[in-house]
Length: 310
Image (cartoon, rainbow, N blue to C red; front, side, top):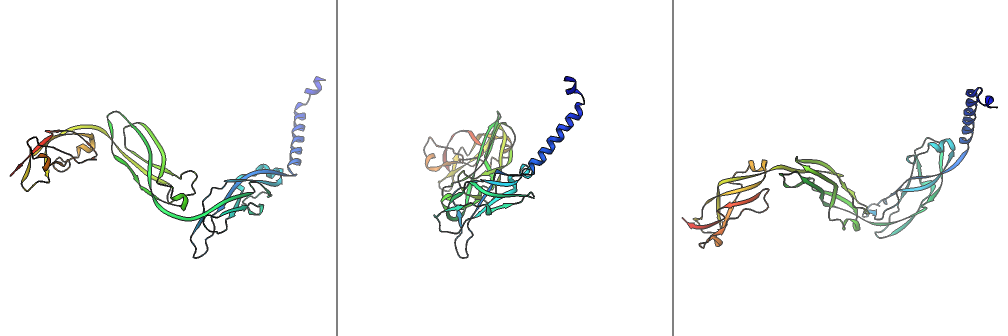
């Protein structure tokens, strides 16, 4: 018995494979029904001439489940990209809620296979809300977190190009948006300038369109340096003609990016001042530097000045 099983095993295996192929061919030639999730596109209403534009203000499902009929062979090759169920929303006033019926006749097919959509399974209806269309310019905010390497500093604020973007969509959604944010960017041990394109994100749950989908983000990173500037002039503010600070020149220690500090002109860039009203008595007034500079004034020597009239 065992010899019969092992004798001519190649021919026996070939017969089994042939029988399987014939069975598979016969089975796949029959018609079958298969559930398939295909893309669903709910279009904004077509606006009649002379009317304000109306758009959808509610989210719709991205896919709909349908029943597709065809031979088993074709159904095995069917893809969700072969079909699209498209619905044109009728025009109506803002705030109106509409129930849209999904029908097999609304399905568009790009397939070369012998398939057709027999039924819409779920959802069979979609409820949408209408609203006025509005557009405005909205600022962009970067979601950037840098951890700089030791002895490095960021010079100036993060630069965006552009720093705002056109946003259009339903009035009720647009009024809730204060800014559009970029993708997040986090880096550790940064020693070099950052210059990247980041995608913009539509706030979740909002039916909004952006005029562009990316912005350029630039950050100036420099090695940290501290340097003393000698004989920096001090100007009197609010005094009579001929009022002069005493001393009229001081030493200033500046800390910041090495490249920036190397380009500073102490005669024109540091812009130290003393207020006449505060410096008129014997103790003198504090010497001040402009706020919000790209560098840090660490020390002014001396820190106070009096007023003399020449």
